[in-house]
Amino acid sequence: MADSKITALTAISTVDPTADPLVIVDVSDTSMAASGTTKKSTINQLLGSGGTATLASATITGDLTVDTSTLKVDSANDAVGIGTTSPTTYGAKLAVIGSGNGILAVGQASSYTTFQSNGQDFYLNMKGSGSTIFRLGSGDTTAMTLNSTGLNVANGNLILGTSGKGIDFSATSEGSGTMTSELLNDYEEGTWVGTLKGGTTDPTIAVTATGRYTKIGRVVTVTINFNNVITTGASGAVSVTGLPFTNNASNTAQGALLHSEELTFTGSPFLFIEASESILQFKQSISNSPTTNCTHNAGTGRYVQATITYSV
Image 1 (cartoon, helix red, strand yellow):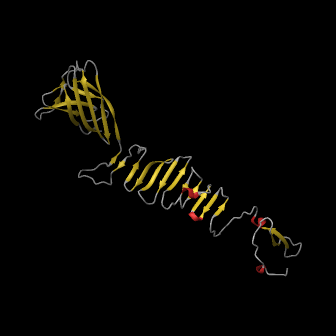
Image 2 (cartoon, rainbow, N blue to C red):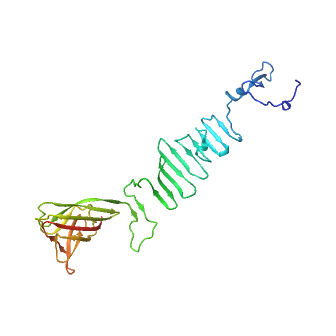
Image 3 (cartoon, rainbow, N blue to C red):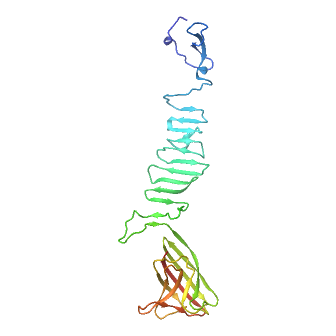
């Protein structure tokens, strides 16, 4: 073949990296000439080994597969899979790590962005538009959603993990009084055991009943019903001990006597709790005079039903 410039040579149509030789000048070998020795090489030798190269900068069109068990780029569906060759299984415009559990899906056009970690059993789901903006749950079960209408806890309770924290209503308007707090930091409901007592002597046989209470913030409402009890032996002022909370130190509290066949009184009976006390007293008001105690009408088949709301 006549001498030709390299640029005038015919391009090779098929490259066999292991067989097709390339001619190079090894400048480190001066056995042929001072300028170097002409030698042959293969594409594999130039790339390092196995036909693998590191691309510092390249423009790639179409699909790119680099070790299909590790990385898959699907240009037709704008999806990237790491550890899976089928990233489009999980929707369009995704970056997917793994298959099945352990999925990171980013930037879906019309659905959700999802983060999952099987080891931590964590599920986070977000959407840029539509009714549901944010979902949080465990596995595939949604526990909480956040959207334009508010926060919805679907499959559990909203738990405040620190004492003294609660729901802050400071964004709402205040009344004309002097506001001291807008934090609702407690709710509780349950039962309590009240014991009917006498100011002089107690009933011969102890008389108890189970009441109910509800506490919202600092406000407590209690109810109790002594139904068809025997108070024989009781005398003096009527009271009930065992209230679930002590009354506020700053104020006394008054409440309603719903029904009684146990009290002796001449005026209008009502319930009373002293400041810093947890004893329910039964009082009567006569012609606006100072209140006096209701006394026992002891016997069998006695009834006392009462409710009172007080502050703690």
